[in-house]
Amino acid sequence: MGKFLLLFIGLLLVAARGGAEYSQDGKLSILEEFESWDIEDDDHDEVIDPANTFWDERSAKVPVNVDSFGAAGDGISDDTEAFVKAWNTACSASNSVFLVPLGRVYLVNATRFKGPCADKLVIQIDGTVVAPEEPSNWDPKLPRIWLDFSKLKGVLFQGNGVIDGSGSKWWASSCKRNKTNPCRGAPSALTIDSSTSVKVKGLTIRNSQQMNFVISRCDSVRISQVLVSSPGDSPNTDGIHITESTNVILQDSKIGTGDDCVSIVNASSNIRMKRIYCGPGHGISIGSLGKDNSTAVVSKVVLDTAFLRETTNGLRIKTWQGGSGYVRAIRFENVQMQDVANPIIIDQFYCDSPTECKNQTSAVKISQIMYRNITGTTTSEKAMKFACSDTVPCSNIVLSNVNLERYDGTVETYCNSAEGFGYGIVHPSADCLNSQDKECASSGDLIMSTMIHDIEKNHIVHTEL
Ligand SMILES: *[C@@H]1O[C@H](CO)[C@@H](O)[C@H](O)[C@H]1NC(C)=O
Ligand SMILES: *[C@@H]1O[C@H](CO)[C@@H](O)[C@H](O)[C@H]1NC(C)=O
Ligand SMILES: *[C@@H]1O[C@H](CO)[C@@H](O)[C@H](O)[C@H]1NC(C)=O
Ligand SMILES: *[C@@H]1O[C@H](CO)[C@@H](O)[C@H](O)[C@H]1NC(C)=O
Ligand SMILES: *[C@@H]1O[C@H](CO)[C@@H](O)[C@H](O)[C@H]1NC(C)=O
Ligand SMILES: *[C@@H]1O[C@H](CO)[C@@H](O)[C@H](O)[C@H]1NC(C)=O
Image (cartoon, rainbow, N blue to C red; front, top):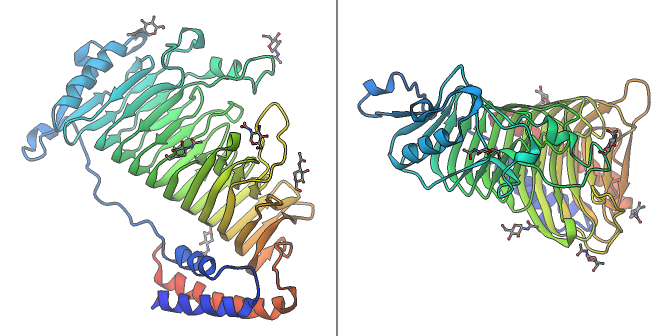
């Protein structure tokens, strides 16, 4: 019934807007897309207590403890070899639990933990794993990874342990900290690559050399109750970075770091985030995309329920001039901001380079972006910024019940080449989102806001949040 109602409203909207530049397909799909998404709760987590599982014949989990392979766990001895041996054993037998036990600290070098593994592997991290501190001793063959897991299928990472990148010397040698340093990449602390059906629950990742937690080339990943903690001034330490991945759920996680709390980049779709705390950090970002004239596509991303505090951006989409591809079907909703600079920002002129980026004619196309129930305080005057390419405008930006205030000052919305509309309360006003049909805009908007209000009510009643 909801779908039919939507279809009907959609047709009305198109009719009301007459000659507007909205494509009918675009309009219908934006609303349908946005109404029908939710995260179902997950009750299927295996709870594994390695001490007790011997007793349960059916699940018969077999602990493979790194200590049994000679790990010292004193934070000083090199436990890399013990980890590799334990991994080889755990990976080759089904029902294994690769166990990093509680209460000890294991020093481990950059390592690839490769699958595929036998069925039902659990990676249980209860203790602390630390990286060697010195960048100059890092394995030159593995410059961008520390703990890298790949080609896994049906694996559960869990535990209350800590993955600590010991990143302070890496940060000091970053060109962001000191312009005389060369700009070079640093390792990501935890990477899960080329894997399917992975769950990650409860881990803490901190002080990464660069990105804290990377999900790359994966399908079907659920991350919950993860804590990311790196200093607000640590350079390029994205919290959770999702690239070339599909069907990812990220929920109930708290991220404080020196770059984006979450960044979602090329070839990612169907990414759902729920109950996310972000701060300090650079906000929740789609992008950057399109660097060096590259093609990038990101679609179907939902953020539902988030709190952002003292971040340098809130909800951000950032693309470079000269790129191609698209970002579409994105919904940000139920977000509260406290002292956030740039709470809502689309930046198609993103340039994170020592040299100036020239404007070009091509750009990553941005459309079907919805912001709903976004409230709180901004530290910048331009609480909403839609800086879109002159040649590839942003389209179908929808704002509903947005209320952003600055303590003692006015707020405004900046638009360049951005088209869309608002309904319900929108403060600061989003009138600069230029509707093409100015004349019938007010009556059209009235019809639209009334109708959409009904959808909203319908949505709230019928959708479990
Ligand atoms: C870990 O890295 C250090 C520094 O490069 C090296 O001396 C050591 O042999 C490595 N350990 C292993 C087990 O490879
Ligand atoms: C930047 O690095 C240079 C060369 O290592 C050093 O001389 C300078 O003191 C550093 N500057 C800061 C602000 O740390
Ligand atoms: C974007 O993702 C596609 C598909 O995985 C890949 O082929 C392409 O190389 C990626 N582009 C960039 C710039 O990483
Ligand atoms: C991107 O394309 C523009 C226009 O064709 C060209 O001037 C520029 O050099 C290209 N940049 C890169 C990094 O390839
Ligand atoms: C709006 O978002 C806030 C903050 O996330 C939430 O507490 C509130 O319930 C939402 N309101 C509605 C009407 O959904
Ligand atoms: C690129 O275009 C935008 C929008 O017209 C303009 O504000 C900006 O100054 C231009 N940047 C450069 C480097 O020319």
